[in-house]
Length: 175
Image 1 (cartoon, rainbow, N blue to C red):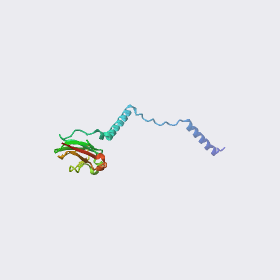
Image 2: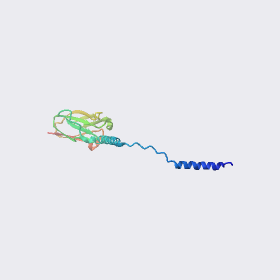
Image 3: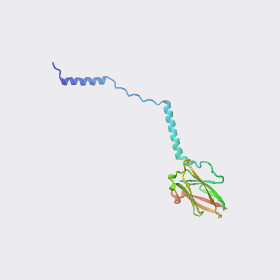
Image 4: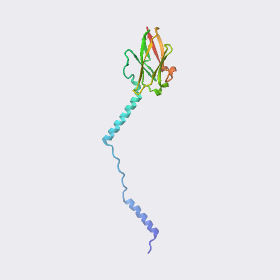
């Protein structure tokens, strides 16, 4: 007797399905667990990234880094927020030394510099943006007028320039 070829094929398919169902699927290999060393490494790396981000975001609020480098010079910070201090008091008729400094990067400044300008005093000084050391410093000497009064100084190279109220300072000449 000859076997029905269709029945044989059907039987083979049924048998193959039963074989697949009767054998469990192979398990995927488990992932290696990190353990305490991996957790500590991840935590320290996260803390380092957050600390660096905080420093870069808020270092500008920390004020001057270090003292004036020249004895008798008045440190004046120039930043995109203006001058610090806003007022500098000096005696009339004397030559004063201002130590201008910034930690603003040159790419944020028009022409890569901050300016200290006063038409009334005949002053135009430029301070280049910060170098790889993180700051730029320059000592400028200005003869104070013999006439007491308040003299406007401003920076005209960033954040609105002369038209911005935050980019102005005052040189107060006292008798």
